[in-house]
Image (cartoon, rainbow, N blue to C red; front, side, top):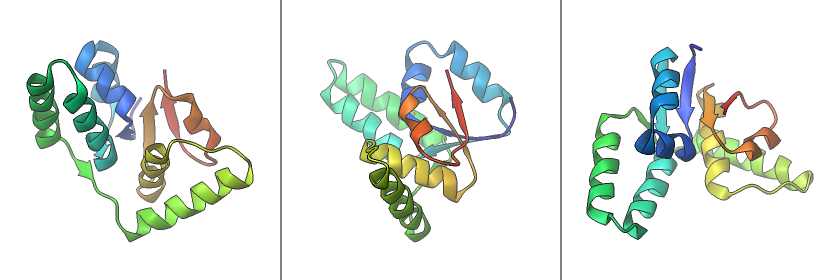
Length: 129
């Protein structure tokens, strides 16, 4: 599967733990991006973990080698549209995932995720497993 991927936090966690399925996905992609939001979630998880220092170092190493996408004004516009559409349908999603979906829309990326709730967002390209 080629294409341009945006990694959700769930996929990055899989990469950190086992990684074989994710490595295959990444090897087949044309480009891979990481949302800054996912890095925040990873740093938070590392702070709370039993292996705090090792996990923080792992996130730091991953982040330094990644093509990280930050949020900007255009991302915020997409966020507002997506969140309003979800509200109108009575389908709230976790805030961070709306931001990740906003980046995916902004840059026309496919979200690689294990979270099925991304399917609630209209027009979002997904690779789920």
